[in-house]
Length: 142
Image 1: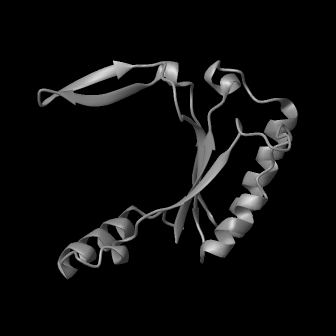
Image 2: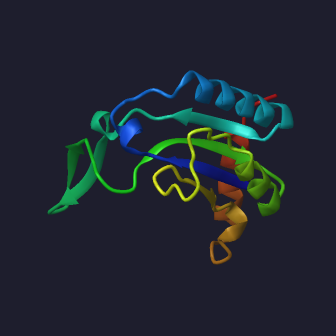
C-alpha cells in the first residue's frame, strides 16, 4: 500500500522561513529510519506557494495563475510503501516535530492512501493490468 504523509503549510513555510537546525536534524534522522526500514519512496519540502502556479480553465482554455495562494497548502511530503494502514499510522506517529505544541492546528500532517489499480473494480481488466505494468516499469530498481 502506498501512502502520502502531507506536511501542511503554515505562516513560516509560506514566508520561506527555513526549518531550525534542530528540526533539520530530527527530520534527517526520521528520513534515515524510513530508508533503513525500506518504506521511503520519495519525500521533499516544497517552496512557498508564492513560487508556484495553478491551472484552471476558463471558457475551455487553460488559465495559469501564479502564487501566492491561500487556504489549505502543502509544505512537504513523504511517499511511503507500507504493508498496511496500521504500519502507515505507526510511521505517522513517529514524525518528529519539535515545533508542535498541544492542540496546534497550524502544523498538521495528513496521511492519505493512494488509489491502486485493484481499487478500480469497475475498470476493464486490461486497463488494470496496463496500470500495474506501468507502475512496475516506473518502480525504483534496486
